[in-house]
Amino acid sequence: MIVCPYCHHRVLEGTLFCPECGASLVPEEAGEGTGHTPEVQPEGDRPAPASPETTSSEGRTTAHIAPTELRLLVLNSGRTIVCPPQEVILIGRSDPAGAIFPEVDLGPDNGYLAGVSRRHARIIRRGNEFYLEDLGSLNGTFLNRDRLTAHLPVPFQDGDEIRLGNLVMRVILEKIQREV
Amino acid sequence: MERDIRLDCTPSRQRLPALSEEQVLYLLVELLPAHGEGGEIRLPLDICLVLDCSSSMRGDRLHQAKEAARYIVGQLTPEDYFCLITFNDRATVTVPRQPVQTPAAIRAHIEEVQASGGTEMGRGLEQALEQMFRVVAFSGVRRLILLTDGQTYGDEQRCVELARKAQEAGIGLTALGLGSEWNEDLLSTMAAHGNSRSEYIAGEEAIVPLFQEEMRLLQGIVAQEMALTLQPAAQVQVQHLFRVSPEIAPLPLHETWEKGYEVPLGEWLGVQPQVFLAELVLPALSPGRHRLLHLSFSYRLPRERIRRREEYDLALPCLAEKVDDGVPDKVRRALEKVTAYRLQEQAWQEVRRGHLEQATRRLASVITRLVQMGEEELARKIEEETRRLQRTGQTSAAGKKDIRYRTRRLGRHGVEPKETGAR
Image 1 (cartoon, each protein chain N blue to C red):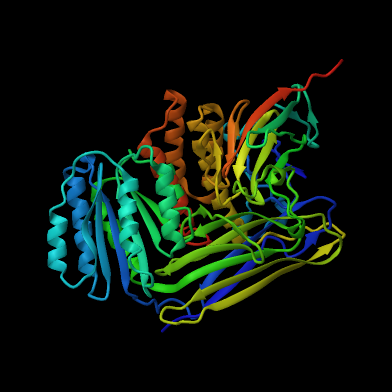
Image 2: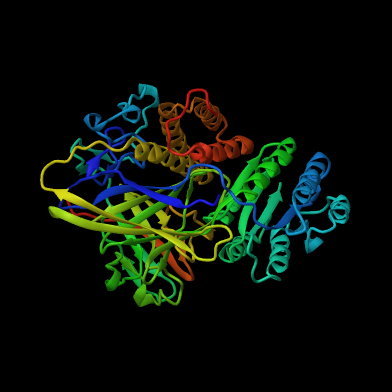
């Protein structure tokens, strides 16, 4: 992982521009030709961090806010799925032959019949904010009945309805209670 | 002379570092005419014009739209087909699909069109498809040209479904929005396919020039039935695929069981460059050479029956030591444009959801990016709109549309460096 020097968003190695603030992440010494002018941003234009969490220069997140647990209630089957506490959560159907193992596997909920693609959508966690992104699925991803434009993450909240094809889920966000 | 097409692929790195975690690799895909410019073919055209005739089109708008329809008919020959559907609260087949043998009679029908009532786009599209689907096979170019200036209510999903049905049958869509009141999310979603596009027309005076441009493109075909197929190796993910040129747009990736992802691209119109950018997520890699992706591009040259195919294997060495090779300039330029496009699209979504502070921040990032790219004029437009957003909590419908469509056109000139003074 590398950390964007401007907004502290964490991205995978090899990323050229920060998807959160657009800053160039190409090291200066790697440049060649006109395309590699080092990023010069006027102080006023410099984008601020996108989430309220504070992140150290090494990219370690210091939790000032109680972490939130994300659960998805699949209305078609009544199953509640507790999402793992990771930054990117793939939603789809597992396909061992194609080495696709989504964190939220809707195969057991009759996802195939409901029109869920193998790599249908993903949830991106930024601190305690959650975004839903359609991955160009065949039957679409809907947030509160609005069809999402493919590859454009949109924020969602507790109580929102997510629909993948004909499979409907309710979002449950709960603060994790910790004993001190 | 008909041309072969060369497939030119450039990864963002020629060598990869061995990592115990995932990493990103970009692949720039350029389609190049093997023998340079010239040699586009004029094929028979099958054009269906779907015209909004709601009351908001009254006056100059309808006058210019009729002028544009007459221009299209004037460009067609008896080998070509034309039909005109008008819609308001209901749809009318004003000119049934027919070979253009009596252009004067067709023009007389166009003249009779009047504007009144509401905007029910779905009904217009249903009639259009009904006319187009009367023919199963057509060896030329089939196009649905939609012009609207208003919002359709309640049938948006139906409109998207009808657009997909046409696109899957090889009928491209040009969706034109006139003025500031139409739903650009709907038109963009309808046109989110390899063989389709949407355009913004600010004022009625620009209708005829845009139709002239459309006809110029449709009358010079380089290739037909183009398709990209991406077969990633196990555990390699194709995260995104964007068309960079002629216009920036995300391309839907449809999974196929044996082939990975197939992306239909339709026709290559005119001499516009064809550039695509794939974002791959690679798994943890050990040192050695790794085969990552197989890409094939298939197409048919006009008037040829057989499909041709170009293949590319992405296989790169992975090194245990640090790799600090430069990123090829054209890959960086392509991704820079796509990044600006994605950030401003995200900003509009945030505005829609009332997250104004985030949207303002995001737009500021787009301005920075555009200034770096030498796109000062577009950056100034976004700055104006950002100030309006901060002042009033709203954006102007016309300003937002102008920015969205100008940003898409950042890819119009391919991935060559921007020439000074060029627009």
